[in-house]
Length: 68
Image 1: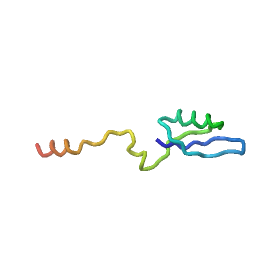
Image 2: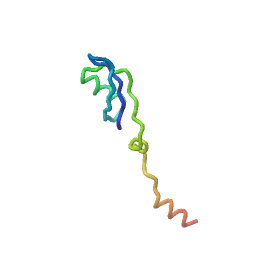
Image 3: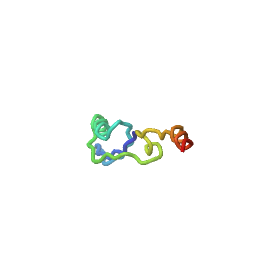
């Protein structure tokens, strides 16, 4: 999943995009780069819209509908 991270570095406030499994992992990655993390949130987009969801069993649904 992609996360939008707002952080502080020596020159000021920055915004990064990091790929991580969880928000805590994204924050840890940013801290590992020497940044002070201000906020972490999942990036919205079509790639993340259906991430982690099981696919709809269309074939099974069609067969059950046909049986009716």
